[in-house]
Image 1 (cartoon, one colour):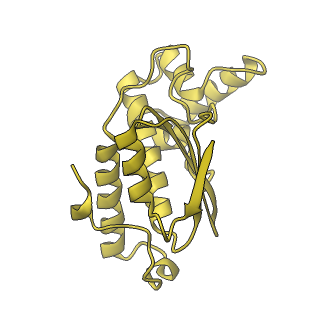
Image 2 (image 1 turned 180 degrees about the vertical axis):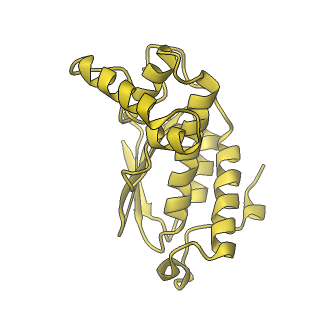
Length: 196
């Protein structure tokens, strides 16, 4: 079963809140002029993200945050490649090898989710499709394999509030692309409209 529509008619904030309140699982595909993003949900919690910009990957984010060095990331990626056709997710391998602590790994995933939400909030137009039949999560973005301990669950509201804070700061600082701001149809609600 899937559910789809236009982000102009049902903004991303409303979709995420609906999924949280109903405790749904599935993959939310978001498509706009810049490409496609994905958010993975399990029981109403956001558990994965796939940013339209392939430069925004968990490993690169962890390097940017100063959690690991580029050399440690490259070493882990090489080890992941040697593990065969179904290697463990990068984050799981980083934790398994002791290069990253679980809490730091999850912080990288949180950052990726927030950046993905902020990206979609800048889109003046777009479409969404929710597939509740399966959670399609690229191994690169999944925190741990399904058969292992699940990731810590942070309130979806926390993700929304942080993403809206980042969005508002970018808008205030003028770092959002002007083409998005010129259109009054940005699919974002002011932070104070988010329900508790």
